[in-house]
Image (tube, rainbow, N blue to C red; front, side, top):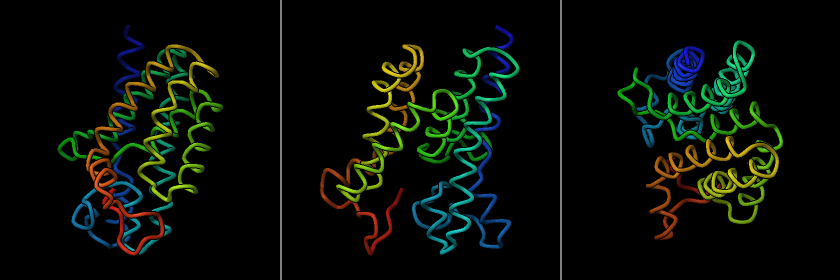
Length: 199
């Protein structure tokens, strides 16, 4: 139980590192929360016009989830690694340092999956790419990938990972609730559209 508790603390601490906010501040661009959607994720960082910072944010957000899993798995058990991954996701979405207002969790979700079970992570990435190519909706791609991740986990991993994926998918749908509303009323901007997405 101590190992599990430590894994949760480790995961949340790593997950709550706001790479988007740190990258834009270090680059002298101010607080990324003051522009666009106010989100700290790579999509909003891209609105600064700095693709390099957006890429750094994307890698950082995915990497912190993967690192949390790998460290916990090395120090403790596979179960602790899974708990660390879940905690990292919640740390990203609800970071205590930012008043529990973080990112939407897509990159961190993918990083966690790749570290826990790379086939499941690749399924998510493949689904995202296919849906994005067909619909040109980034948010829809993320949502479909998340929705299918528990099924992929059942095929390629374990029921425990499927349950973890289900929990994370529910939270990810919550963080994308404004995107879902725009998808329903047809106002969501497509990839490459003139108006930037709010998520």
